[in-house]
Image 1 (cartoon, rainbow, N blue to C red):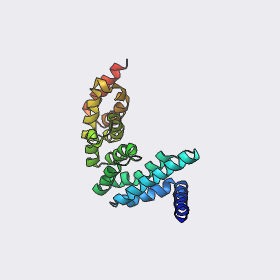
Image 2 (cartoon, helix red, strand yellow):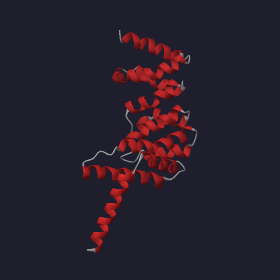
Image 3 (cartoon, rainbow, N blue to C red):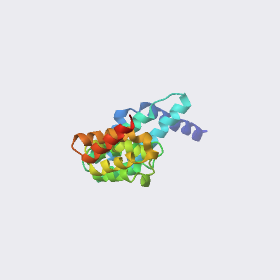
Image 4 (cartoon, rainbow, N blue to C red):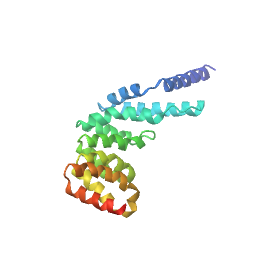
Length: 197
């Protein structure tokens, strides 16, 4: 009987912690994780799992996406400033069910801020189990900043007929590079604009 009561008490605490979660609290956890703690990433994932359980139990929709993005945002920013440790934590987060769909965007932010290893991760998107579409969206800002590897990646997408649904997004990234004087990006956009006529 005592064990049953204790179990109910633990469940109540978990559900209470799920309700209490805010983007600001998740951001603080993300900052802690950026110091190199896989345990904090595990804790973030556990928190999201608790929120998911709370939503199912109470037929509510506390936004898991907003909480996940808030947790990964500090990691992206710190990785963008050159921290390999923070980037490694993003890679670790990619193995977590409720985080993995938000990781490419976070890596993309680090790439846009100039982290070349983040660019490489996205260019080699298949190794991380990401979709081409995720890589294109994530690399658009880095390409707009005229990162050569990001630009070349989007140029290949623009040459791929099977990826035509991604051309509008790829062209947005290339537009930034073209405005900064990238000749290959200008030519690709000219060709793309002709296909729309």
